[in-house]
Length: 119
Image (tube, rainbow, N blue to C red):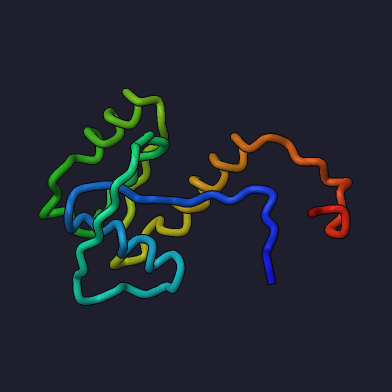
């Protein structure tokens, strides 16, 4: 059976190795961490839309201060949120924010169309 989507969006997290990109996705989708660590490789064009500071539960090992992350996001005029996939801190909020941003940019669709009128 072929599925029809009015809009289809792919979300590709980017960042350095071992910062928790896959862990954030796994926690959001399956509510679990994926162990052991596996490296993923993607080749794509980048357009920043939001900055997530992951591993906020590791305050003593912080590589980037929260204020620095916020300033960076502000310089790009994009939102900033700190998350922890391990402790499930702001994981859902990060994806809800991203989804809201995506929906806001989508063109309005004609809601009067019915499924039977789609080809």
